[in-house]
Length: 251
Image 1 (cartoon, helix red, strand yellow):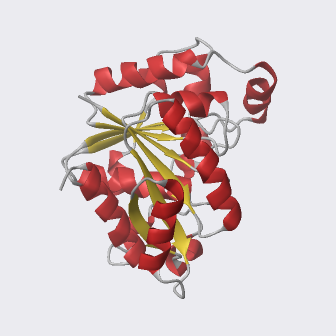
Image 2: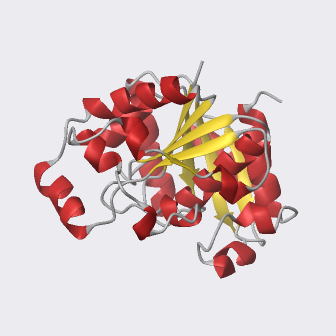
């Protein structure tokens, strides 16, 4: 049984894609087979973290949604990037071609096909986890991915706009009958008391805080040149992400 986990934020710049890549790595290194969908079709980016260069990309999620290929043709094995492990990571990237992005914006696509893609890849690769990197804010494809997910992780910075927008997202998740929604507080400066912030978030949102991840200078310095947890496994951010993986694994 594949567990589908949507990672979402109300605004951009919350560190969502870095969390997706590092979480997928932690799960694979725990022996799990992981699929990653980049459904941020208007501004894709998680492929960069997995070292997938534009000239290495043939088919993409866009091609599947337009009926040009099977979803397995758009899935790239990135296990070698994370080093020796008993698990695996397969990434389905969105196209970074300007013409493809413009076509999506102008014409849209059949959102129902996203769920078909999730199910088909999960079955074909016998996935344990399917991580969905969503587009920030509220839109049709994001609502679908949240609705079909077993778990939703909402990434929130200690910022008033983030808090207000996330409250709207949680209300929508409740209307969609999401049973397992959680908050991950991210980019938390060292001067903020983590326990107080977590308590404030749980009181505001009425759902659990799964982790409080620090603002990491090392992660910022890396500048998306890879998966941070591989080079700095003892950094508090990397330790925190492994804690999220452990929670998903039920440990």
